[in-house]
Image (tube, rainbow, N blue to C red; front, side, top):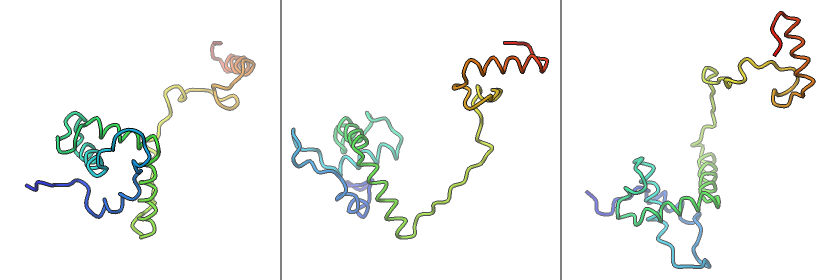
Length: 144
């Protein structure tokens, strides 16, 4: 077993490191090493383990969790994803094919039997509802 086993490859880290925020100019103490925190976050999602079961080699679980939420809020993860997609697309490694199977698309239970008088059922005025009730009486239904 390797003592310094990593979750993120050296090539991936070399690509990612310059895109991560710097702790220079921030108040408070120094940040824990980005590599260790990214390794911790990657390990957590790769294994599906709870945060509290993070191995000691990654440092405190709270640090990894807080960095994950901070980078989610400030858009760091979104920038990394956009850059990865751009790089993969430029290299011809990305296929943008999307397929939707209509058998999994369903109407909400309240929308299945709803009568559309004009527009969305939530935006129908009181007058439109009365007209709809009159129509249903003419069709042999009972008024609401």
